[in-house]
Image (cartoon, rainbow, N blue to C red; front, side, top):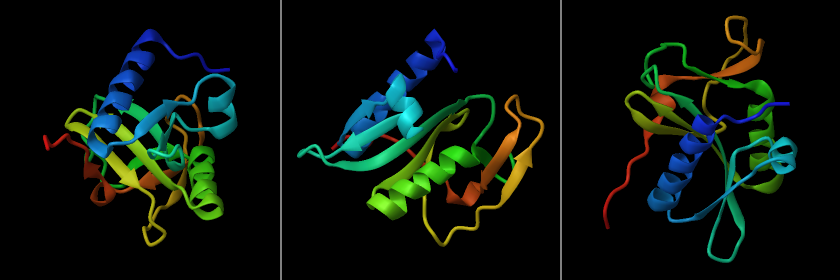
Length: 144
């Protein structure tokens, strides 16, 4: 079982606040059993309460979004859960990362080339999806 540190919770709180400001939707943190069940950090809902986006968040503050030419990794299990939401429920799947060069997001698109590899150098050795630098968009708040 994974326990979130105080720093994890602070980072997620900052991300939640930014998502709500930038995208204008209510972000609900999926915690405890809900996080295990849905495998995502947040669900974003429109004004009627309909789920419209699932978001996985990671803090990678020691690298830029384009540090690795091959891409940034996301565990295959979480990626596949995002695909379930996209294809089975027609709910968009986003991967949001706080990099050294700011918050960036990846929105799943079926035309993207996303190689699957085995990450043997990370603490949780597992199959992962590589999200290439050109697929990331900067997430920033624009005053309206």
